[in-house]
Figure 1 (cartoon, rainbow, N blue to C red):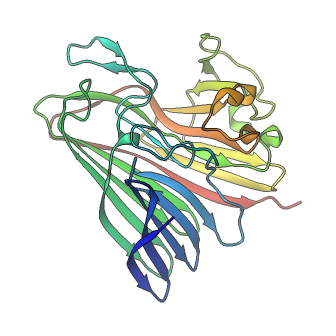
Figure 2: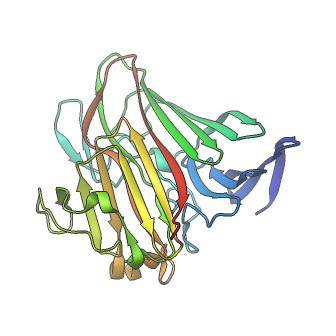
Length: 299
């Protein structure tokens, strides 16, 4: 990973631009509060590790780093559609490749700042005709703040003369000691749509987070992942999102070439999401966000 340029350096830390892979660049920082990295390809957070903590985001050892491929891990952005359907201007749904174009687009650095308490990175993606299924002119702005917590805000601006609809998610891969020893109490007995069985409005106790699991929960704005092996809680607060998506491939991960062996035991995906269509009025903006806090479990 060749270092290309020092973008900012002061008494609090250093931010570098480096080569993630051929044709792909990323930012990495070392700060007095911790360290992390963000890919410009996909505008995707790759890692974050506060001081005296295990890594918060998981990244596959066999992930693809090439144009046209999604990066497996970190926080991919699913936008402007989640899953494999897009809504056309006439209101009809069309089958498309999963999760939209934002996670496979080249983002630009809009601003970087580093203070004694935080690193703040702002990325942007602006243009039109990113996809034949999405000819709309749009601008995405993503603000990432790394301090003792993590704050992510995605602002979506419709630059066209007519309203558009989107679905999307902040597809967070959370690093855990063992997904089979990980719980999410708020999801116990909560209603969910099961994407594996195709059955909706199901209810069951979530014993652990080892899959195969692929569920959409219509639930509250706050979740807590209880990692019993590493004795910590990961608290996620979302705004502007109506659903949570819980995913772990379990044994099915063995068929995924960009998921390293036994990787399914190392993470759980809990995604702040809008899986139902949301409108953005002409020349207007909407935002979704998440804040992640860490708490050690004390006996």
